[in-house]
Image (cartoon, rainbow, N blue to C red; front, side):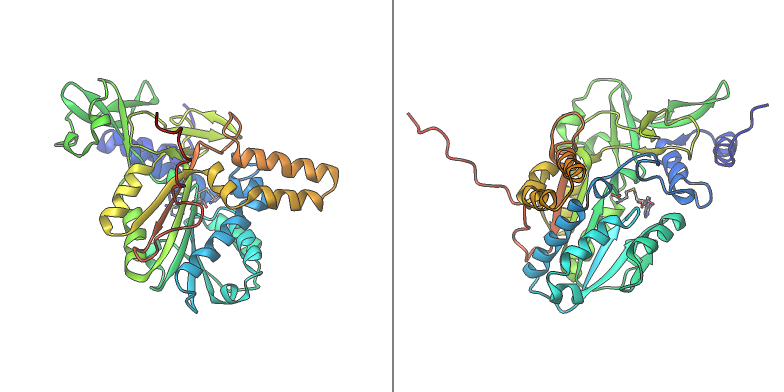
Length: 374
Ligand code: SAH
């Protein structure tokens, strides 16, 4: 008889007793099951891990976000105390690089209280190691656990790990995509009945999708909590992730292990399971709460506007030949729109209290003058 991992045995038991489970529930169990979840049990980041994120590519990323935060603090009227919050901080690299860059502005540096939202005990320990004990850091399970007060919130590759629902279009309507066991393996199936009145909530371009199309959506809990906090206590947030600017139909559920794509239905809990972020849905949910949104813009555009090129030149000037090559390739990886680059696949969305009219690097630039009218 096949030996299953404890997590796979648990999921099989749930399906055997309660029937097929939604993709979102499966994803949640795989990633954050309190004992066997992918993130709970390991540090998946870096070259020896499963995937590499922008802060792990180069210190420039966190440094520029630190300077972006400083410009927000200034737009907030330089409050004497501000919470710098990061959602899903991984190894703590981005926060560490941001805080180092912020040291050039002592008044801001002193105003900051650092709060990290992290489910994983393994990664919390790693973050503690990275950040050292030079300043107090508080960890939380949920954003709503953080005490009130003006805040600057950063989230890189966080929203993509939040559980996603998949809906399949049929003649009868949109049916939730489920996971079942068949022939002793996990397989996709659909709920027998369509989700009631689902169609009326959809933007027209998704409603028009052909039969068989898949539409992904996430519960807006997290984005609404974030937006409510900014509306009520002031500040701004920056959400960076891979995803699309406009809600669209398409199956983007993916699993990654050891830097390669894996089958999301095999070895649950052993691979990172994610789906692209729908930036239009995030922006609409935030606006409905009553905050201002900025962008989204592509990551390459955002980093170029923040001056990543100048920072790279400075680092190159102070590096050995090998180091200079590393900086140049990191710059390309972070900003390039080509196959290997994160420049256009990743988008950046800003959210602010309505009193803040612009956020650095996120306002739409005025269009260049067009050709003179005939
Ligand atoms: N931002 C980091 C790590 C991205 S990986 C970077 O860019 O390198 C996703 C992060 O979110 C990890 O730290 C993971 O443990 C955390 N995470 C995943 N699900 C979470 C949840 N439901 N609540 C809080 N943190 C979560």
